[in-house]
Image (cartoon, rainbow, N blue to C red; front, side):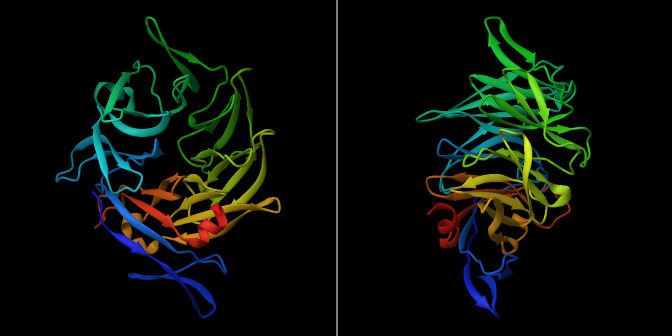
Length: 369
């Protein structure tokens, strides 16, 4: 795995701001700001790949895949583990199901959730433990009547979203096996979730198509839920709790914008346009990093409003970074990890890859220093 290194530098071009790369010129939409970064491709996947799971946790980068690079394509359900630089590949861990979702779990563990086409698409989850000299995988099979889609939690409290019953279930291990206890609120098509103290935030999906989403805030103590929006939104697919503010952020793909929600009051406080279908979130220092189609925007709050302070245009990275989706960060080194995920069997080149980005001085000054 790996290959490809790109370095960008900034110049002034006819009083515009531009970045020059060895394979082209990239014009930035934000006036007056340009940033230098180094980008290195560390992994490339089959053009048939439809998994986008990736997390940075326990000082390691965990990347899931489901299709091998051999021809003809074959199933290869596994997780690759890299060091923080992305240059050292620690292990490939095989799983008995499609690794559709992956999350941090405990200090030295991640949890992977997914299904397998055999046995009526039954749901599984695997807890992967990073030991000093090795890795171990423990897999649990859920009962057939639970078609789990999403997870959030920790070893102390595990919650699974089950769209078929419009419920979120708390999973508990017992002396006789395990139990699945539903939370009281009825949640239409529970989507991605995020924990914020004793509150569980969830995307409410009223159908299979974009344009009918809401956000719910469930208090786990009272088992009550409040909805954020009076009217349904257009394409909420991701939710994130900011660490630097008491704010929940969601994307709205249909309107090319992100929405900021006061976590205490559960109300919309700010809206920010992010062009080209905003998707993934992470925080770098005091900035919120947001992926869009072929771009990363760095967002910061100033005078009570959020604004884009720097935007990276990723077109020069080619088709390999054609569809940035998942984004993660190493807060110790300020590295960003971006996964492009777009299954395209008819494309000449794959659009599925992982790049490591080393931010330049402008981003570090704006977000970290």
